[in-house]
Length: 52
Image 1: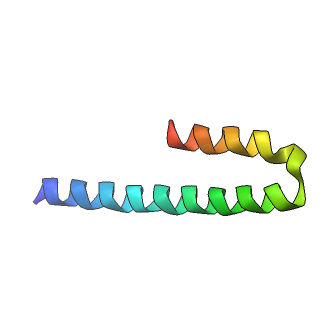
Image 2: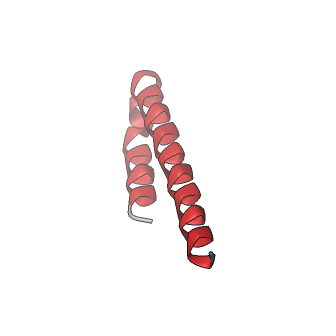
């Protein structure tokens, strides 16, 4: 039972991470069109999220 709850927690966390990465990606696209100078920092931010 405890293992099941652990896996459920992990699933929720990964879903949240996916949501976070997707939002980062959309903001990256937004900055690409709006303000190209801030793009490198956004890319770095996205990499930081992917690599923890």
